[in-house]
Amino acid sequence: MKIHEYQAKEIFASVGIPVPPGEVASDPGTAEAIAVRYNKPVMVKSQVLVGGRGKAGGVKYAESPEAARVLATKILGMDIKGETVNKVLITEAVDILSESYVGIILDRATQRPVIMVSPAGGVDIEEVAAKTPEKIHKLAVDPVVGLKLFQARDLAYTLYRDIGQVRKCADILMKLYEAFWKVDASLVEINPLITTPGGDVLAIDAKVNIDDNALFRQKEVEAMRDLDAEEASEVKAREADLSYVKLDGYIGCCVNGAGLAMATMDLVKRYGGDPANFLDIGGSSNPQKVVTAMSIILTDPNVRAVLINIFGGITRCDDVATGIVQAFEEFKPTVPVVVRLTGTNEKEGQKILASCKLPSADTLDEAVKKAIELAGNAA
Ligand code: GDP
Ligand code: MN
Image (cartoon, rainbow, N blue to C red; front, side, top):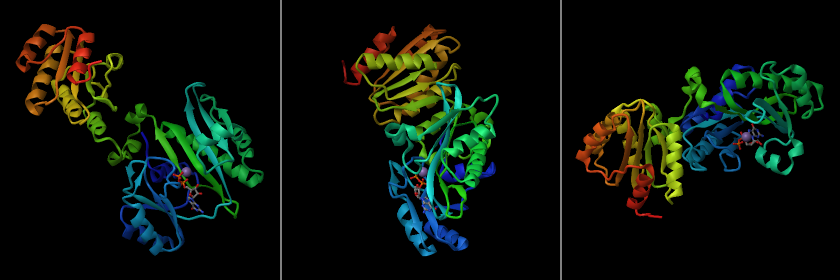
């Protein structure tokens, strides 16, 4: 899960990382009022869940409160890489002497949090990694031992010469590591970490990605989720406890079990089709879940045929069939729906489905081919 800069800064501030004061506004009047209160030049920063806002014109300096209002008017509603700006962060502008990069990611290769620092901050770190990898210093931290101050200092020395700044940076790295654990992050990033002419070290940008699998114990963080910035169908699926990922193809897939869903998508591809989604209705056989799943699939305008593939184990085919019939009554699908039902209570399931007069198939291969054919794209 991604969160906005202003939310990431709240997390940073909660562990003591210095960030300039700021507040969010959803309208130009509020933006101006915040700037009046600060009584200083401010930055007007678009809050979207994508990077590179500065380059896209979504981060601007405002000398006066009036300028903040004018810039907020311009930035609110702007489209940045497909995301609409609904909020701006109004934050005190600071004088920047130097910009560095510091971040921690969970690295699957070493199975450890890896701290990365680079004096080439402010710019796209992927570009630094590709063109001048020698400018990035890394340390894989043993999670049992944790990050030690001497290690943080070693890293800080690659960024700064001044001992005061090295100490401040090392302290920030220790706190960043703390924040990484505290919120079950998969990534925390400060780009840029800046120095001011007065010698201060500050985080003026903040990025935090949370491991979705930890959200059950991160209620406060989960409450930060921005539903406006997410695919509406994915929100609906999550609320119904379905695992759903929207894709770009045209065969809607409704499957029980993640493994079978993957295999189904592979087969769709193999026979020349293109899946519109990944959807796992889970192991339980709750007809309502099937109804919700169908409503999500059928509202995708790219879907030209639906393939329902159920292997009944714990899942009972009759329950799934009941859900399918219910979905047909409710949504009256205009696209062909192919069902392959096998396993527990298969016969009962088929009987229930008979009323829908659906093209059915006995084997998965047949079902997949039929769905593609009916979608008008026979391989
Ligand atoms: P990003 O483009 O989405 O990464 O947004 P950032 O928050 O990193 O801002 C982009 C750039 O704007 C930074 O790298 C800075 O150079 C500049 N910037 C942001 N805040 C300030 C500020 O308070 N003062 C000054 N002078 N520049 C700033
Ligand atoms: Mn940045």
